[in-house]
Image (cartoon, rainbow, N blue to C red):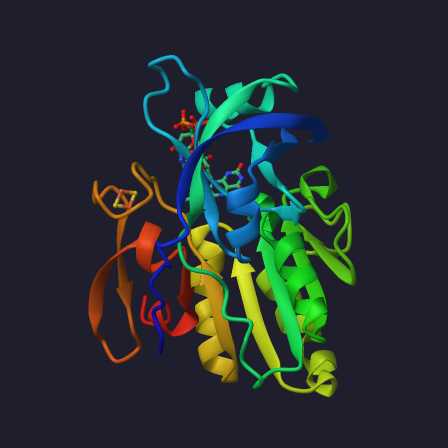
Length: 269
Ligand SMILES: Cc1cc2nc3c(=O)[nH]c(=O)nc-3n(C[C@H](O)[C@H](O)[C@H](O)COP(=O)(O)OP(=O)(O)OC[C@H]3O[C@@H](n4cnc5c(N)ncnc54)[C@H](O)[C@@H]3O)c2cc1C
Ligand code: FES
């Protein structure tokens, strides 16, 4: 059971120009930021903490997964759920924001112990999957995406390959949640060699996946969310309790010891 600390040596806080703002779905936009130092150091699973406005409100920065890296540019996928995300989704091209990153630890993709990566995501949890998929593919791993959403309008799958979908209302793919889809598909995946699960999405989905990993003896990296302040281990705003199956309870700072944790650390919940 591993808990990987974030690397802090390459973190920078820079003013980044919004070079592109493109609408992705009804409430989601891709914001492209010119930040070479962050792009150069970013790993899949890392996030950035963005001061969405130079005004005093919103005061705190907002965390976003790194969705893609292209040369000096990073993309973040932002879903408008409140004041900060709405401001960012409406930020004009040519404007700038302060960006702190890359933050947090990353998905563990270096292991030679798996051939096929199953990427499981729900809702805006799909945001880190493009960067992860590209990096895994470059390492010669096979990738399968299982993507869940309330309806087909909430599936955020553009540019991802080898996708299977689950929707609550059955409007696209499997009717049900993404963990039930995984349960259904697992027998077929067994022919794909050794599997590892990578997941991001709502906490109930991740807890359910942790139990699934334990039951099926699969290793899994789960990217969690919490409210965050500083993003660098100072404010203690992101502390979460994790429970290992042996009953051990630990409090971790998700911005430094996460957002990615070993599935075993949720399996006891
Ligand atoms: C490591 C990490 C990576 C993230 N990556 C992404 C991403 O790639 N794209 C994206 O759109 N969002 C992402 N989020 C969530 C995003 O940071 C929040 O949605 C955002 O901070 C909300 O800010 P706001 O000002 O718009 O909303 P607020 O006005 O602060 O809150 C509006 C509503 O959103 C809820 N909310 C606030 N923060 C969170 C949160 N962290 N998780 C769930 N609900 C929240 C509040 O409870 C409230 O109901 C990530 C969060 C973390 C911790
Ligand atoms: S967000 Fe401040 S300690 Fe984690």
